[in-house]
Length: 396
Length: 81
Image (tube, rainbow over all chains, first blue to last red; front, side, top):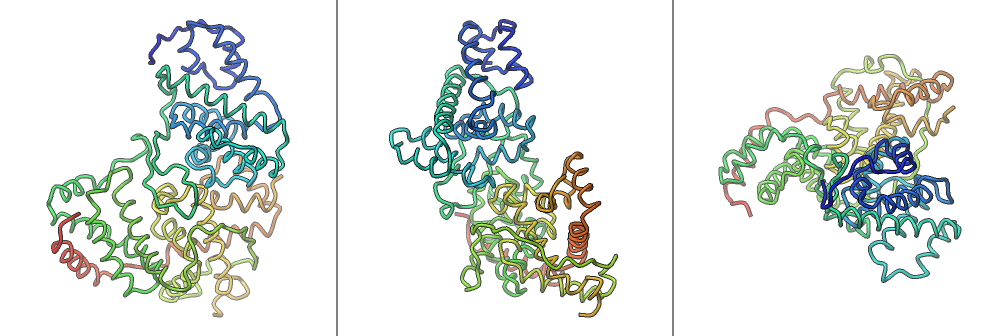
């Protein structure tokens, strides 16, 4: 399991109790050092005092530092172990995963973002670390005791990462993320490209298009026709929702499939072909919209949205309209949504992509995608009140 | 007891039926006494139903085959990179 033999049952009772209470098991990293139980005890006591015990920083803040610093070290072991621990504490795996990959996209409060920026910088660029970095924490109202704990947590994580890597210890759980992630934690939001998600094999479902894609890649150009026929509807609908006109969607569909064909040699199969294709279609559509003045930036911050127009609706408000009227009013109102909410809503609610697929197609975190879908739904609901509330149903 | 703000932050998960049972209970308890969130939940749910069943943004069948041909003409005129 590692470079040194594991020795079972050599943990002291105190260490075993601490580990089981917090991890539910004695993780391999400790079992792998049992030729020196005294040193394991010392590590577990430090872990207990600094991470598990109540301190100046919250347990969550300290756990997130551990995830972020492990990610800086491309360490797969600790995110696997601690995402599991965080789940016991009520943190969803998607949230822990997002903090690991890129905490700035994890919908954290601003002060926590500053804290994790601090931790990542200290871990990855200690030579350029200055008092200004400490000052950044003070400006976010962290006190000296919290700053000390943050520095110690970075150091503790470095120690544990080093032990795990030095001893070649394999994860206790199947990891959700395998490093390295090439696009991990880019320095500036505006520099982000929509990346291909890089998950372990277990989380990428079998791709039903695998065989056809392989044929096309092997030079059987005609097989591409099957992909166009199969995915044309999804690509067209995604594009129509972005560009808004049928003629332009038809042109954009041709561009999108053509680009997909040209770039097929670069498709690495880390997401489904259909997800990759939708991503190309979305980028193609957005390029067209960008050239217009009304384009709203996709990476702008989401302000809080307060629903208004809270009026009860009739039981089946759609009964007041013909199918054609409904289709036309839905298209009209959806097209009025800002593009970033519109695209998220279309992929989830019209194309019925899963949250994970839609997030991957848009290069968003799962919490980020969910926030946009909800915002889109609430804005659309608001615009529908004029047609469907009890007071107005059938009058427009 | 959760607030309206908490309710709205979980509304997306509730609509997707992706909430743990203990959270669902809290959301339902909130709905039982908050008329505003009740109306918001009901009307958003109906909005989604209308959107998904409206047949909007459909791919008209008559254009499908000509588009396949156009794409394939373009594809055949070039080789992948």
